[in-house]
Length: 304
Image (cartoon, rainbow, N blue to C red; front, side, top):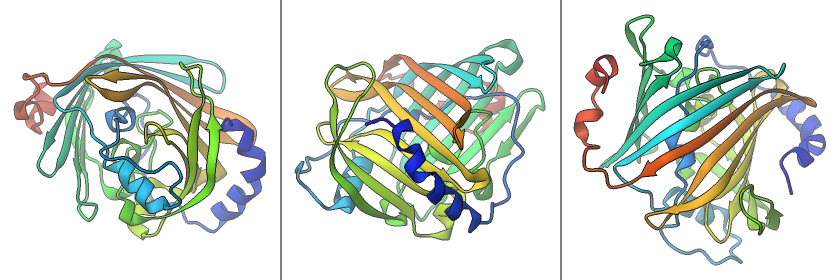
């Protein structure tokens, strides 16, 4: 089962549902790129086991969101964006993350190329779904730090195929889940064996969740053996589009399963508008120099 193979059967549904929605006001799309989502990438081993025969979609998704994750993390990200003409842009980003009692903090800094060097982002992802996550962006060309508002989070994240909301975890209480298929075999890049997955539909049930994500609904393939999402398809409210995300090259770091590569692409009809490729390098946990001093707003302008 691949994501592209299901496009035709859902195209009409996508167009009909999109017409019913009003696009929220978003942020003007920026030309340069930042980093992509350590949250999306660091899908870790489950916090507790779920029976592979479970038919409880809420239980499954709650377990996915509650999985164990590494702390005091460092990584170097290689990001490539490919437009519909085949032109490529490459970026190198350093990423740091730290747990705190209320959630997780992340700091990202561009290293290359020169035109985006020292672009930085700070995210505070709260466990409490009722509390808005905080995100700030610093652009050296403007010498200015900007807070990303709730209404802007569905917009494109610095020219990638991911949004600002894709960079934070979802609260299962904000979604209605149902199992579309009890077992689907999914081919995952970087491994010979296929993953036996639940296929689960997720629909935002609060206006806030729908506005922040910009999605009408998503379909999520969850690996039964790893209790992790291996691919996602989302219906975007704006422009009658579909977004696809695939996770691959799973490896264990300190006993935690991590997807070391992500592919995200956006389609309108049969045309692929753009593709984003992310590779995680030098990922490590338990780094004592990753401390609270990194995750301060003042660091956005000062740098590391």
